[in-house]
Image (cartoon, rainbow, N blue to C red; front, side, top):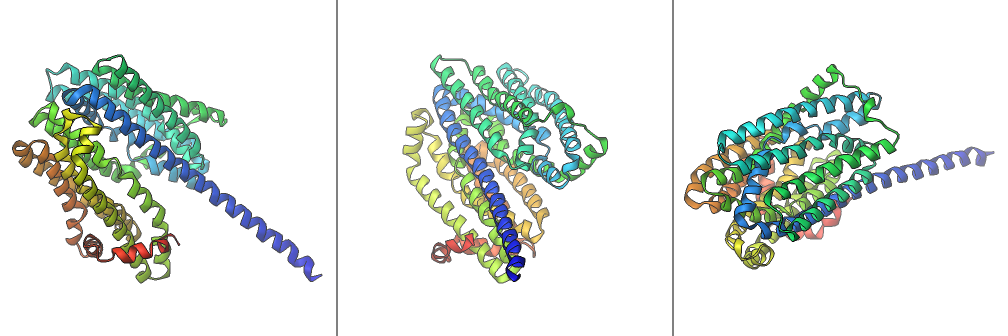
Length: 456
């Protein structure tokens, strides 16, 4: 009799364990597809950019990069910081799915309309006689219209079906790269390469719409609601501001170089930055993967939590310093082989710019530390600090040192915003102390010995 009572219970437990494993594997597969798509995009994107830069030469590549940076300054009007917010809403309120998607679509369409007006007007005001720049920004703006449909990508993420959107992204990137290679082979003009960039957004949008429809969904069923639109705006405005600051921070140096020096300087600088920043997704992925270990430790005791956070800071500092030293020692042959002799001057820029990566890698941990401690507002404050520091230093250094000055300004602003800023507040000083310890590599050996503990 006793066995009869325990057998169903055992079966129930086993069933729950199987279900639990199935859910875990679903999320693991989802994450793997997201990461795989990112790696493929970065790798192939870097390859195509290098080949295109070699073909166009520093001056034309500078015009291309300047125009793209100008449009990117307004890209936040389309993203509106809704990426994670949409996923959260779809997960927390699945019954409001059509309202959420419809309202987000209306917001992004409105942002696109503003972008179509603001970008040409801005271009005409700062470059009234440069027809090529105007044509390029108009073409790039068309591509951003199709990014409106990235909303469907967030639906796939919320439903743990990232494999579909990642597969479409791989196809879209491949099409764009193939077009660029074909254009190089036929000696195509500069504008054609802008259309190749737009092609990626078009293919991505079409693919998302087709797969979404095959999932027995219809975009025509989306139902925007004024109340939901207002709610999404209220929730996303800090993210919009943070996104604006980040975009300004990453693009303003190329625009200022174009205005204060020339387009060739922009091209050389853009080539160096492309290599310098191309690897930064790796520490971001590591921090994302190990962040749950930080939170798990925080639930047990604060000492363990701080210990694991310190290990993460140490790991990021080790990675950043090793990469910075390695690239500094090999910058000249790297630039010469990858981009060609026309870009040899970019070697000096790369040697300087790469050192900012140390503080960027550590910021992937400090950002998550702020989240764990409920200090999200400080991420915004240091963003403001970084933007204003970068602007001021660019104004001072670019007239004297040109592209080198822009690289110096970037590194100094990263040190100021991502490291020194944490020393100014009582609540953030703990992070500053951990960053300082990591920079001196005092815990490097202990980190390497206990790296497996971070995953438990």
